[in-house]
Image 1 (cartoon, helix red, strand yellow):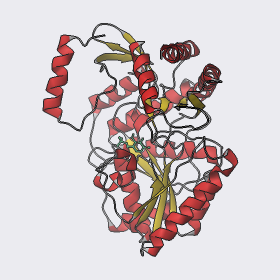
Image 2 (cartoon, protein in one colour):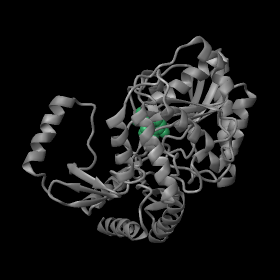
Image 3 (cartoon, helix red, strand yellow):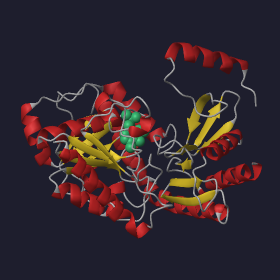
Image 4 (cartoon, protein in one colour):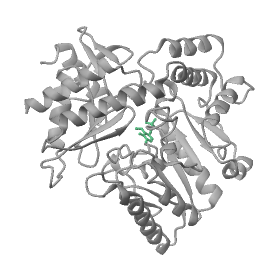
Length: 426
Ligand code: PMP
């Protein structure tokens, strides 16, 4: 389909106004005008199944969230230096979903800012600088946090205080060895850091390793790495920006799959269903000295409207049984995709947890060479058929399927049909 003339003009204006660092999804970019539930519409009235957006995890424009935002915006929106029920009650509610060891929440506006604050508190409280992340991690965009985001590409700052470990790998590492391999590589990274006179402050990872290619299993495999960083005097920071808020089906948080209590938890994306809300939960001991010595004020973080949005999202997750829905519909979708891909030479693995599923495209199953071009073809074919997904991982070859948590089984079937058509097409 050719772009409508107005869109071609808008793409030109966009290039001129926003500059070269912005990207559009798809060979034929989408110009969306409306969203509801798992559906998006373009200006021609064409409808798309959104199977990618994990920000609007309770569905696009959920009326309860819109209503909560609107109602609070009509009454008061200010910052956290006045007494207000909003941030206190919201922090209490978040903490109630977490292990007892986590006792405070601090609010920010983006996932990057949450990780940036976690990093600052970790480094200042431990008096150590070293941080270890996975080789294809993404933790955000600030100057400090982009160091922790090797997946950002060429212009990521590199410093000796950040070291990389290999992420999990479902194709090359047997599941029962995943935990020991990660811990062994962490030991190597800590050793190399120490050889340069840098002490390890933290190991931070996305608890389902989203940008490394999505590795939620086997349950518990993170524990040896977490034990190790603690034994070496550092802390474990769980980045829950992607796995958090019921995405994986069983629990509120991805780290719960591993039976862990992190020292800090960072949260963002789905927290406000599109309204900018993020935060860090932490062990109180970590922030005691920082809190006494440094004033922390974030102009927009934790404002009453943000907290109203966050509360409404948690209400909807509970009221609509979205944990259960993610588990049930996600489980059925994963099984259907596994059936569809069984025996194919070009798909090496279908994996996932809840409504977060990866399909790994390879050039041949035995060699398992990543096939990013094939993944891109499938993503664009599905988009032309009205189903939106994307691809991730070091080779860009892993289809990333991550619909809003309100997806129903009949809607999941539309996705399976679209993937089937793409696989048949080329
Ligand atoms: N951590 C993870 C795991 C993420 O996926 C992202 C966003 N993709 C971030 C942090 C950064 O969040 P934000 O874009 O809100 O700054």
